[in-house]
Image (tube, rainbow, N blue to C red; front, side, top):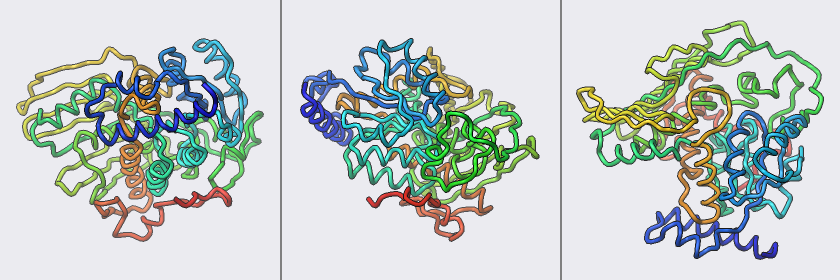
Length: 449
């Protein structure tokens, strides 16, 4: 297939995918779609950001059935690219190109797909830069650094007509899909509340102090859209999550994204009317962690339902019998669901079904991957080809991420937020609404839609 014809195939596949998403694949099987659009064409893929999520991509890229070519490994740290190439050599029989500059990667006309696993402040900018250049994007959670970026991603996806999927991989877990559908069909009656939770035992972190830029690190490119600042010790390697708001979105953006997404999915709600937060830093109070390590957040919705978030980053007491998960309450029963499966209870508290996954992805371990991530990435690849409906489009990802941003804004301002249920905008505080977006380094401002 010529380059021109291959690009036309991808273009037509995208149109088919978007139509499939809108129509719900009524009247067509995946096999039929494969015959219609020629699903065997290979996708050229780049991964930007080769840190702790890298393991999630070995299997879906290495599988022959995925029919993808890993064209680029991209990272701001040279040693990350070297390590990633070595690790991928166990899964593929060729060597992808190594490129530290994401802009050069995105300018390659042969590239079809960007997997964006960069730090949080790069998620939305990296995605819209890719969309502008005609690429489909799989972006890790949270899909945005602030609420405005989530709105922009939805708008850019519509403008460029490409497939964009967030890494909320539990949306592809068979057990989760089964029980959520059962909830929607009335398995526990009228649902009214969900409690999403996370417990971990993160330790003390060093205080960030000015330090030489590590060998092999492109600090300028790491900062990207963020305002420029001097390098501080160990910032680039995960601790950017906790060192201020320039790069990270705290634990709520880091992990609540997953469980709040499941809660929203179960309750079938979008934007809240009110957000209340009780949060603080209670562990290693003099260390380098600059935001809360414990948060309880309550989200109220116009239909009368409630979502609560209970996040404990540094106290691993498992209040609900697991380190993470979601409990959904209904008028006739309850459900406990996490990455390992689900348990269904009647109103008296008797367990009537226990469906546990045989998979290998769950808990609070850093990074990695597993069956859920593999299924979610493969679903994305197949959506690009028009073979499957996306298990979670970017609008779902952006709205779930918004809940995290609203909780963070409530914490940062100390205010209970009143929100417009049609779009989530904060209506009672100019100070809080000022955090809807962020300051960008000159030249990195978001483009106009």
